Image (tube, rainbow, N blue to C red; front, side, top):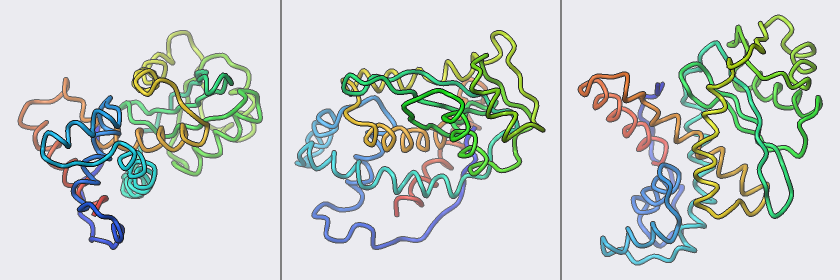
Length: 237
């Protein structure tokens, strides 16, 4: 469930851009919030009388997506105390790489990290990122039986309970589904740098609007959604 509800100050972030900030912000939000291509966003804007090329939308997403993501992460008020970890392979231009993902018990994405390996060194790099993002917050980590996790756990999180029981890690495996959907929609990821940039921004926006609709009353859901929109307006200002 989203942990945001603050407002921020405007900046000069959009100087020298021909289109108004509101259009840029809306296009970037559409791209990271929904399974839309940049050409589809071009059409949605055209329907509103806004003529912009999909190439401009691509540049906006590349520039502002990471900025918005960093601001969202700074404003985030913390994750749960159970971390579910998993890794899946991603094919990038014919080269197999591994996307490491960690989510908490509320389904919020703690971190995503693309690496070429899934050995002990790769696991330790991922654990170090988790410790940096959420120092001292985890009391239990849940993984599959990949030995690399055991190596990283012993060296970096030995005081934390490590659960490798069967089916315990289903939550993280399910959290990969939105990434797979976007990967298909984008017709594959073009480079490791582009993939990391997009997936980090996608995770931050996902967390902001991850409201657990099926667990909430309509009134409560609307209140949280308004809060999320307010937070979005603050970080893009």
